[in-house]
Length: 340
Image 1: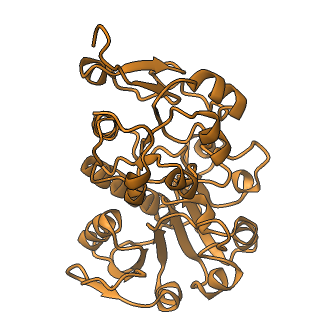
Image 2: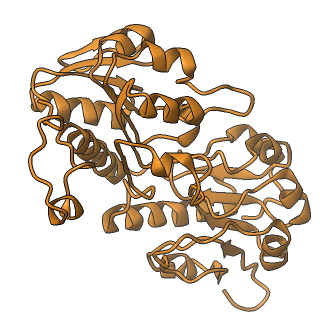
Image 3: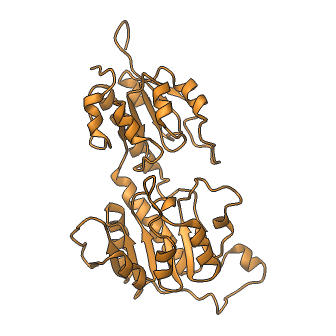
């Protein structure tokens, strides 16, 4: 845009791993606060003062979990009108504060994410069942071979419990059922079960499942973990637990204790609390674990689709609209400095 025509701007505080030229073509100025490509190493979260200084004057923010967007940051950025969050989770953004200040927040629930996350969850299930956390190059190089105490478990004929029967939970259920597993599912909503899925309460699922896979939103402030001491004790002895949802769903202290005493047969996770975990986090040295760096949706197709949706969300919000994936539509009536 040229002359005196208003030109909105967005500050990008996380790598998108996909070009942002489409947004610039729509007349939106893009400021990169980080390189566009991820570095392959953990980056520390933005210091609030550094973020405010860098994002000053911008109407939009675009990023994932590289910053905590608090009420104080919103107040320090009076021009801020919208936040485009990469991914479906938004616990790093104070939604109540954003709504009160008329700042729209939208996520990117792209369809392409469903399949790859479901595949990742299934890979973790199979990895635990087939003892891949135990057998590997180092074990063989050290003279190890088939250990009678480390035999694989059969997925066919086992019972897999899906906690959260949304799009990803259903995709995991379908894939696991295709391997011959019995599928139990629990969800707080009243849902019609997918074909071959038995809907049960959470306690029944925990008691009867050989593998429990979590696919629900993270816990809100003030809520305890979904799986605490009691729930972990209810689980079948030697059961496996897989978490590709959120790190705060499981009481970490109790989880590590149950892994160490053998009550849990194994744990596989792609999410942590905090994230990433510090080097001395006890989960990193716990027995019988498979851990991945929040990479379940780390695919080129997903990054492309997420970034495109985020760009479209930004344009819609900056021009007075509200995308379908907005998480606080009640903020519309309070939107800051609406321009079209």
